[in-house]
Length: 605
Image 1 (tube, rainbow, N blue to C red):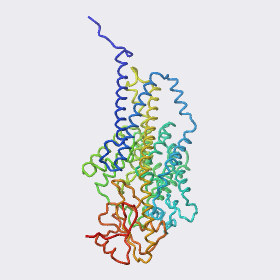
Image 2 (cartoon, one colour):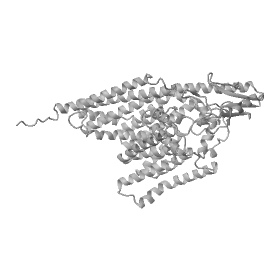
Image 3 (cartoon, rainbow, N blue to C red):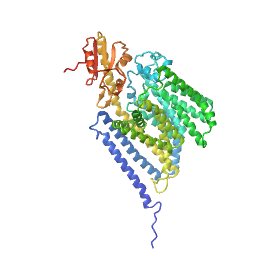
Image 4 (cartoon, rainbow, N blue to C red):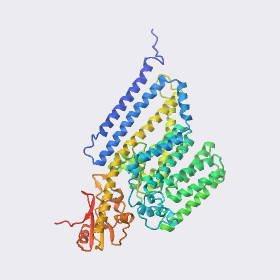
């Protein structure tokens, strides 16, 4: 009888399998990349609006990056497995970890990004310096600082706390420099936080880069970085949490006071910092569970009470001030449908690649009632799976992303600016998962007959992280360049509209009443150019920029207006024609052809 034929580990069958797998990955990556090229060149988008075509093009760039990145990663890992010795891999990894410039490089990347994408920074909302008083109504700083008067247009007034113009430093250059410096500081603090969680300098830089690139994926440019206090709040949140970690590592009571002081500064700057106390509490619980099988009462009393007593008292005082100021602690319209839509929107905004493409697809499908429910269930499954399968430090970052975005999901209109702080947790989580994913490769024979050695396994994970960060960077760059034309167009439209309004007001000084109709015709197709004047009355813009505080200037909206106009006075078409017939009234309306405000002419029968 013939002996059964055995194949050695280096035989034909063992050597053929990884080759087939690599060829399959290459072919799949090429198909994805080619499909992305078709989309990027405008294919399949002839029936879409200009906005939809841009989103489709951006999605095509995403597919090109993913396909090309997958091919490059597998080829690099395959070559490293067969041609790099362990000593060479060890020296490469040791050199990467010993580089002393990780933190300066991270800050430099953040700074270069801001300078590179300054066209988006230069698009400022005309009325933000006036409306900063309304923005600050979310916190008690409005009652403490002198923000009760109306300031003329001053770019620095829209930064963080609405610093008044009497400081004498409100020039556009200062505005831009402050934005750049604060975001660079935040990127450096994210690096420090990621290093404490991953214990890898390379992945800490990767997390900071992901955080830096997150804002490039937001369709409305740099909302978190201009006109709102989120960047300053983020600075306080990061300093508070880093101080808390130092305190829990036994570094002394001065770090406890740092945690308390920075937390109070954060919540009194903007209430989006409130969930930090929940993140710290979960850190204590999970950390104690790692040390002991159960959490004792002594741990609660001796550790938690001392750390959280003052922050909790400051939080109660904050709520009392807000109650006395607004007579409401939470001002919102809550519905199940809106919460589900906000939840899915937040998941799209925080996705690692091209957040707004997923949001755009979802928003078009959200007219069907079951779509938000199914999407929410899928998101819950993903979050639950990650929370169960990851380590306790990764759980903290998942909780960070969820808790910081939860208030916006429950009580607000979802916007990318609410994801500036949550993106920190998501970026560090991705860096940690990338580091952990290399361990799973040891159980899969992808790159040779024998199992991967620990050194090769770590190197494959290192390559995966490199290409992941590069894909995010390249795709973020292309997406940002794609939406710059939207911002420039919107900027031109708003400037023409405001200037033409002022010209007509000055041309007819005898008119007792000037009725400015903020008609919702700022769309071109589905393009969202005029977001500033969709959410801001023209009267406010005129007072903020030109100091036109005439009592006869009023802003109204036609009754056909959309959901953005809920808070504005309405006027019917018949009432508008009656007002236009009054010789003492000037009615101005938007002309979509010239993008200017022109006198309203009644429609003839």
